[in-house]
Image (cartoon, rainbow, N blue to C red):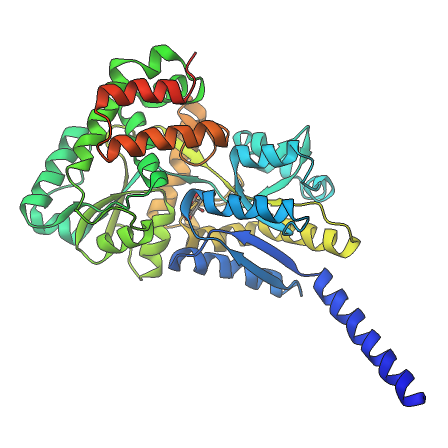
Length: 415
Ligand code: BGC
């Protein structure tokens, strides 16, 4: 009898302990699966571990987060949402509108987030005035990454204009290199497109065409020029580009097989992870013609509704860890992004991140900062995906530039 009781009690105790331990865990859905991204994620995992918060990993690969968002929808529909989810821009707002997200107001007030998070990020991190997510970083995607030794070898300096860029790619191709390392996936074509729209018409044109969806901009000669530039770029990618992951394209630049890649600054995380030094081994510069403007995106962790006080506490601790200045430095140094707080010392970062921070401040002060259409900060998912389809179909030769202009205008329901 006694043994039975003790045994029963012991089992119940163990179960309670297991439940308690589980309640202070966070299950995190994300798409940080490349070498550089995993290294950055480790900074967050270790930070939480030091506070006795366990981590259950739920990775769903695929830049732009499309696949992750599909998985998320299935989890929520099954009544089993993860604790915290990596999310971009309008997706955060959409989930908040469905009433699926928790509230981070207490921790945000205690830590003064209102004063340090830039307004363009707060627009996505708050819903109805309430904090619903914690911004980890600020990325931008109008960047070019170049292998310095390759440029030296072919006698090409960093290009500053579109024509110089095309000439540099021609020189690389003539020297037997792959001029442009590209991964043929719709979201990557859209990254390139973001940069080319800025390079043709600057932030005002980007805003009018892709954010305000003005027909006058979408059906303009400038948009025709955008698609023509996309065709030029298409002529400099290798024949195996189709379906290639972005980090494999980065590797081609890292190992000297290719000269350039147009990609967001998560690509820098791959260079850093490979032990490469900015300015020495590789160059980072804005898509020629887009200097002064920036398509931004911020990775945020949105906290889903949870029942128990312990789970809510773990969410608050995770949010607090994310916003801590020391974490913002350690994480973003590895990730390639820049901090989501305005009060972080630039000098602790490498030259690419310093440029990123300076560009952000300049663009924000001069009207040059626009939300990335490629990454859910320009339009909600339905319009974004419709634009993806057109840009990728054109890149793959389904339409010519003139038809692509018409198709994009229709896809974005121009006004
Ligand atoms: C995310 C980045 C990520 C990249 C590639 C983007 O959508 O915002 O954090 O590194 O996709 O996976």
